[in-house]
Amino acid sequence: MNQTVTLNRQSAILWHRPGFRQFLLVSPALIALLILFVYPIAGILVRSLFSPDFTFKHYLYFFQNPLYAKVMWITIQISFLSTLTSVLVGYPVAYVLRRARPGLRNFFLLVIVLSFMISLLVRNYSWIIVLQRNGVINLLLKSFGLIDQPLILLHNKFSTMVGMTHIFTPYIIFPIYSVMMGIDLNLEKAAQNLGATRWQTFWRVTFPLSLPGIGAGALLVFIMALGFFITPALLGGRKELMLSNLIEIQVVDLLNWPFASAMSVVLMVVTLIIFFIYNRYLGVERLWGGVKA
Image 1 (cartoon, helix red, strand yellow):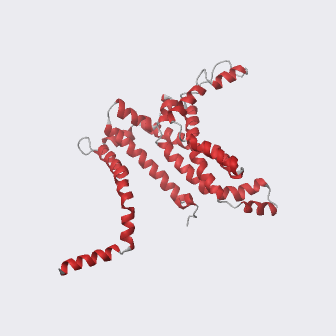
Image 2 (cartoon, one colour):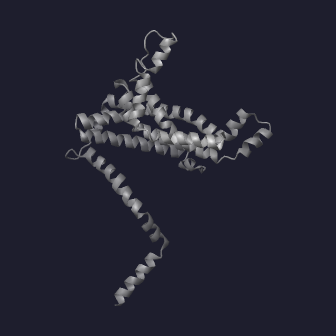
C-alpha cells in the first residue's frame, strides 16, 4: 500500500514537471523524425560500410577515382550558380511585390504558389520544347536572321541551370518577400529625407535589412540543388553529370547499393560542411533575422 502511494506521488511529481509535459508534447514529432529521417540515414550509413563485412573500400574508391572528384566539383558548381541566378531573379520579384498594390500583389503571389502545383516533369519537358534544336528560341533567332545554324541549348550546363533556376526561384522569392514585408518603409523615407538617393537608400537600408531572407533562401536552394536529380537527368548532358545522377546509375543500372550509399553519405557530409561554414561566418541566427554574437 505504501509502495503504491509512493509511486503515485512520484508520478504526480513527474507529471507536474514542465519539462516532462513539454517532452510528451514533442514526443510524436521526435518519433516521426526517428522513423522518417534518422532510421533511413542510419541505414544508408550502415549499408555503405558493410558489404557484407565492415569495410571502407567504397569510400576509398570514391576519393581515389578522379572521375568522382570531378563530378563532385560539377555538382557544387552547378548548385552554386543556380542558387546565384535564383537570387538574381527572385530578389527583384520580391522587391516589386513588396511595393505593389495589395490586389496585384496577391494575384502574383497566387501565381507563384500555383507553380509549386505543376509537376516537375511538366516544367522540365516544357524547357525541352523551348531549348531544343527546333525549339522556340532557335526558331525566333532564325526568323530574325540572327543565326544560320541552330544553337545547342539543350543537354548541357546551360539548360541544367535554366531549369534549376526556374524551379528554385520561388523558394528564393518567399523568404526575401517575407523579410521585406517586415521592413518599415518609414526607414527608407527617413533616409531620403536626410539626402540619400534611391540607390543609396536601397544599398544602405533595404538591402542590408533583407539579407536574412537572402541567406535563408540561398541556403535552402543550395542544399536542395546539391541533391537535385530530375532536372540534371532530363536537361543535362553526359559531360555535366551531377552526383545524384551517378547515385541513380549505381542503384538502378548497376544495383551497387553499397557504393551508392557511400556516395550519398559523402553528399550528406558536404551538405553539413556547407551548413556549418554558413553558421560559422554568417550565423544561423540570420535565417530568422537575428544577429550573430
